[in-house]
Length: 210
Image (cartoon, rainbow, N blue to C red; front, side):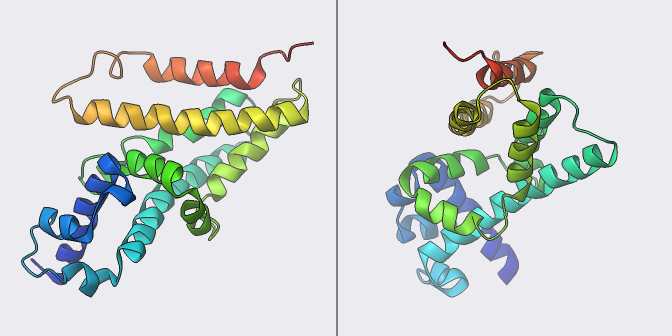
């Protein structure tokens, strides 16, 4: 195995562990063992520290999603859109699923990020401030332009609710599909993701109480 292959194998093994137990629940020794490295100093050799490894995994995950979102938005805006809220929600949701396809790996991206947001949101935000969530911010800007019947302060609260719930829902989907060898009765059902989009529309556009 080449040095680059070893490096990527350590990253994949670490992300699998972090996705299940969070970064605080995983030791360097466990990462080395899971990646089947005979040299106990292999993580230090390739990444220096566990923190540096975590930061690189955040970048990998965020960049993949951000690139997909920006590409979808570029095309949509070139065609004069988006014209409907649902189009923006599709850009938020669909680039965030099936992330393992790019590298032929299992999907553990969303659970890794979801647990990290709960355990160390400061670290996550610090890394994302490097321009890795521009697609998400562009989506929010379009939502603010399209949802005009809801007071601005109320909409901002709902955008936070949407972010938290969407991350949790897609992480749950990822975990369920990983445990299923064929299809999942709920998540593989026709119309499930469409119903998720409808639920998000309702969350953002519901009439405010008097």
